[in-house]
Length: 167
Image 1: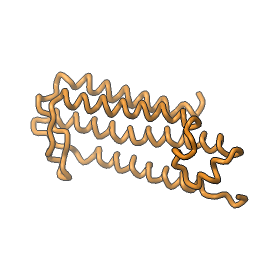
Image 2: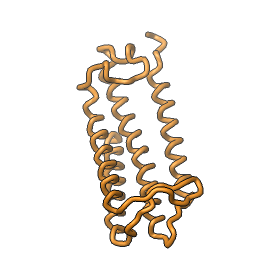
Image 3: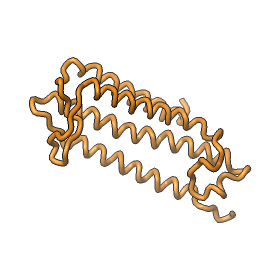
Image 4: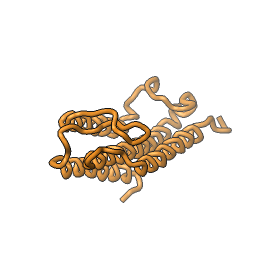
């Protein structure tokens, strides 16, 4: 398996995890779901299970569309691409390689972002199985790690697409 397929596999695994967990826990969820929590872990926003399902379906759909669209970067006019120093990197001799790098970066960034959301949704579902819903602090630690990964990826992108010395 090529390393370029790893983000796709991870996205599929995360999507399956999300769908599977919702399907397994659906019969046990209360009629009123806590869907937003304050810093203390106490719920402060509610929805019905069907509203929650619509929100999760929409989120998954948006990520599927974005992940799919990453393959189409080369079809976009340059004016629609937001790339550091794009005047340098989108010249005819560098464009294909730059877009291939950006495509893989975008796929990994989407997978990390989706992973953070799946962890949060999973924690939200688990919290709703308690007699009194309360969000544990532990999933937030995982999310902080995933956000740190995003920050590192953004820094890498800017470093990768800095103006080369020979330009």
